[in-house]
Length: 368
Ligand code: MRU
Image (cartoon, rainbow, N blue to C red):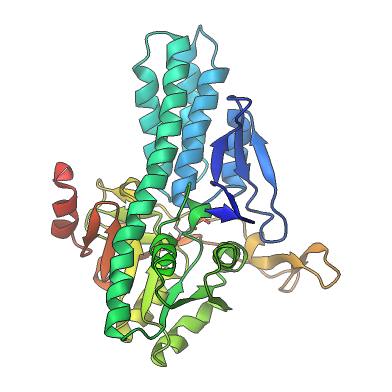
């Protein structure tokens, strides 16, 4: 996608130095656009943990490049042990998005095909780059499938503006390019469909307000920021035609883990007969799990993310303030699980399907 008119991805290898991974520091958006160098596995683990980079697809792509840096760092004697240790460290950074373990395992398998440390480093570089390119290509295809769905809604509304509600940031910043939930939005907007996006702020880290609003603004997509609890009211008043979110893990029966608050949007959508659609690349399916609520690990993060808020003051300074009494205890679950029965459709790179095991496996017969 474009930043100030310049084609930009969320992660890339520095062109004059193949040992440096570059990412956008997402903690500083929307107030500053800062590119950071990641030069070691330690730095990659830090960037994943502190959410310099975040979002399921980008977490996977970053872990892929982290494995490449591990292969560069590994001594020739003890190469495998070093890379295995790095894989464990990377996998431990964030528990919910399955793309992380998927990417680490894919890189580990690619590295193992080399005959020597030099060749294994080369395999790691190729595999990390291929994984990133594949993520971008899959998201682009999600956009094409989802565009047809939005076009269908537009036709039924006889060309009247389509209002779409999204939660968190499943945009290109959460992937390598295009995004999952936003890909259909960008594709439909580029095709001339009249649409508008309700952007949930997404407390506590405000990925909607900081990232989705910024992305949509960069692309010129009309949008309005709303407080997290507004969606139900909008739906009751016919102001939402479609809810579309991303996912951090989807089980083989179609249960969806996504940013905390998604479940409440799905309940409101169900009560108001608004389609609730989830967009994800195949790397976000976890075919080993059949019960999302029981099985998906839910990340609990630092309570200070709830107790504090960061933003720009009227003087233009970035400040963090406390929003509760000094002694108030807080808890901070990052994700929730929406049961498959509340999901109207899943969109992935292979097409659109219902959220149940038979329908999902019709797109992924190799997992049957
Ligand atoms: O905690 P984050 O920001 O890494 O959470 C991930 C998300 O942005 C959302 O849950 C998103 O909708 C799915 S990731 C594409």
